[in-house]
Image 1 (cartoon, rainbow, N blue to C red):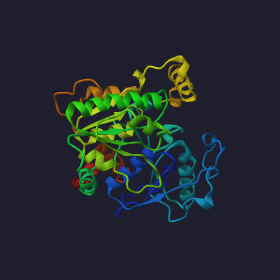
Image 2: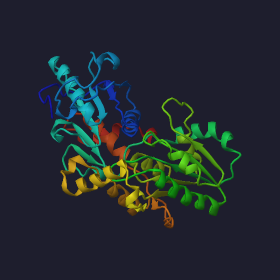
Image 3: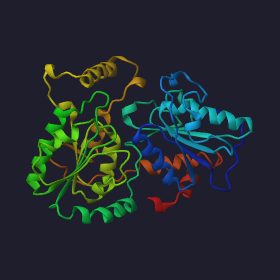
Image 4: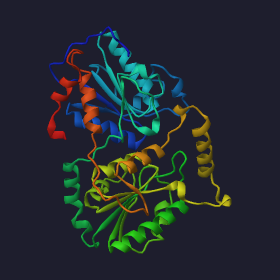
Length: 377
């Protein structure tokens, strides 16, 4: 880790925390979730990234961002940075170096899979698809961190319940992602998904609550909507829209269907404790004449998963397998498990590990666990 000779004294007050956001909504949700659950005051930093900059080759640098259009990075420096994405790593190291010149240690917590060596980080919080090795500073969680809390669900349900009251119960929430890695979510896949969830809603005598996400391509929702006959409420995700019913769907749904490309949405669905179905994009059969750019990219990605270094790909199937094995979800079309899934302990472990970075080594993790606020759990 960096700056081993800098101060290690325990903190009398809450550490100063910076949360570095990036261009991916799922990763932003995770870093915010951890910051919120820690319960310490934090500042959010957003950046305007430069195009064409080889950020993977940058070390400690701000060359990858347009500083005038990004949030300021000035003293007082933070005690803790929570971040994700390789694009933010040079920024983290630049901040750490600036603070080190003033004799201050900045602890780095990275969520997901870092590009730099694992030793460069105080803590890496990862999940099965990244296939990271066992290290003292690597926390292996079952699923991603999330912002699904009873309070947030109750608040969103209270606002949206009257707006959806005209739809017959039970509700089946459908969370649609997008093409990612070896998976292609095109119009053909959207039509297959629509047929299957339409049958599910019909068998239950209920309705569909359908939302797309930041990665959903144009035309997907329209292709989906053309295939359904069940009563439905459809929401097309847009950064400009403030009336996003996503958490309300999670709160009000009786069952949830998630496309298999999104680990974040799958985790959030499972966090509700409700029955969750995974739509397996790998099972969508296509003819060779249907090959598209996305389909070719997926084929190349599958090749890379077998032959390229592991750090260049993700294996989402490992998350699916673990969720199903733990009884948290089933493949869409398979019977639901006859037992309730266990509660996630991932956030508790993550908070305990982060807090342990700010206590004397002699006290270790037990002091960190004792310091946690049980109200968050």
